[in-house]
Length: 113
Length: 110
Image 1 (cartoon, rainbow over the protein chains, first blue to last red):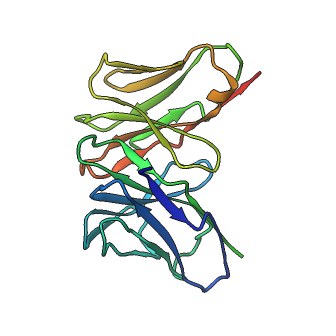
Image 2 (tube, rainbow over the protein chains, first blue to last red):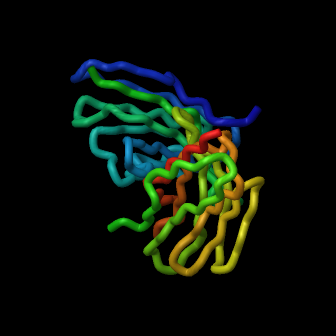
């Protein structure tokens, strides 16, 4: 089945540690996204990539980094510079035909202890 | 500047009690408005795209409508399985970016 796979689903981190969240898609989509979701707030865009080897900062990129070496993969690193990293992280992809139709993964919940 | 505002924040309904959710937007030159459903602990799932005022889309007990300033998601005779958070979104000036509202959490009691 085609879709987006995020891992891990739950992650605990100590302060000062970097963590990397995985996102893999087999939908053959060019565009991929990382969003952060906090209670009572809408999804906020962290980074997005329109094509392999290219990515742009979203609205809240500080303290995060990404890479896009393969079309299928768009990992997100939450660095120690991110002041409030505890959140629900969502990866999504988009085809070219239907501009607003994002396909989301199941999400990764990061808790900083 | 907020581009998308959803109301109410939460909605509690009895099974069979129809209601509507509102999504208002401030972007000019709307290039589509999108509705998603999100179950607890899951990623959002795409429901509808609306492009022009007067347009309507339906799926089971859900019907989405669009005016020049807002969209409504009508839930007719809801069932407990309709309980979820409903999100709306509009494209920003860069079509690759969507601006999401905070969502309306709907709870339907049997």
